[in-house]
Image (cartoon, rainbow, N blue to C red; front, side, top):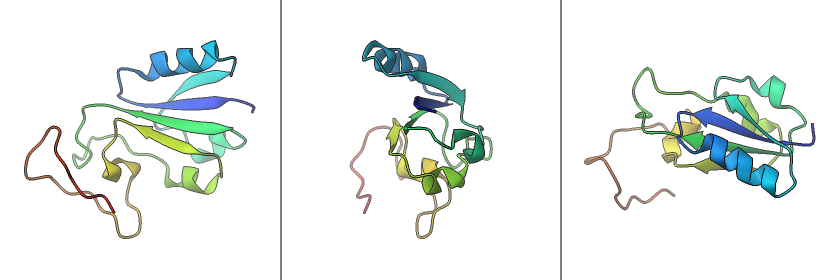
Amino acid sequence: MNQIVVLNAGGQYCHLIARRIRELGVHAVVADINRPASRLRGTRGIIISGGPASVIEPTSPAIDPGIYDLGPPILGNLLRPSAHGPRPGGPGSRAERSGKSKKEVF
């Protein structure tokens, strides 16, 4: 697959992102955030377009952690760091206040 996949995690810009990539002459498709990593094998790059859903709510979108083992570059757009799912040393937690604020990530 010589394409960029934009995973839609509720972001309002996922189709715009894919269209802009196509305007650059690169094949891009929008896929649901629930697409398993096995169906993304061979992709040249992955963009995760997030949305307003809280990442710590039980109904928030989840990403197949297997995408991190596929190898292509991954860009998370409008995501909180914990939206990438449970990773070693990085569980999600509720911030003291919502909205735009400074938060040390690393």
